[in-house]
Image (cartoon, rainbow, N blue to C red; front, side, top):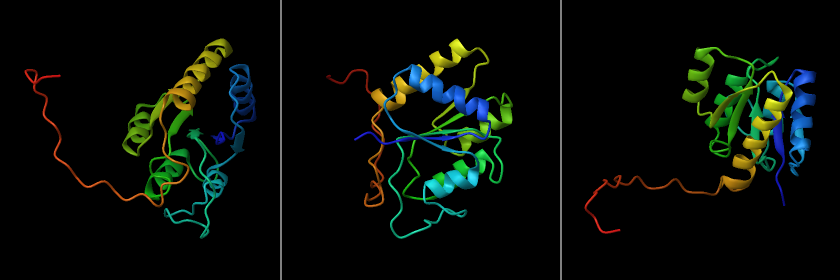
Length: 168
């Protein structure tokens, strides 16, 4: 069963363009739209501070497409809350925004964004960007399980050293 996509977008025009681009690229996943940061966190079952809102949190989406400039709770704060909760910390989050500010890019990656994509102005280019996002994140990428709350953290291990003379 396909898990939904969580689209966090407050601009109705950008929401419609994104939904249209997803349909045009035959993305089969359902899309849940959250129009502000608080709604996005509630959909994920999170409260500010990284805590779960209930004892039985909802199933996670396959990916979060996150705008930055949102009402109520800013997109970067939403990302921070997602990464704070052990259940959602590895949930793929792609920042999909019009912001070209270097500090937004740097902070997004510092907070754990998996990707930062600027929304192209040209619709055909936007459709192609969504096609590539869908191809990678929904088809090629091996994402986390529906829930990771029962996973034990991996024991730290020593990184393998590259040895060019080793046998393959």
